[in-house]
Length: 78
Image (cartoon, rainbow, N blue to C red; front, side, top):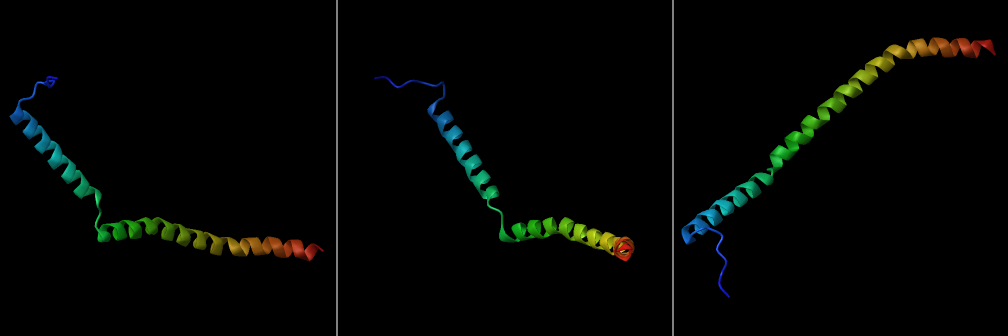
């Protein structure tokens, strides 16, 4: 059975395979993150949580006396 031709010469096939090999190797190399990069991304992701905690704490400290005055008034009625 004769081999079907796809229009590429033998040299063209070698060049195409080389191109795909280089592209595949470079994409795999970029997919593996170094450990330090993973740690930096994790630490930077924790910053919004810390800021949210600080804001929540400040608001609760501000709201506590207001809430206590309402609670104290409700307790004094009974």
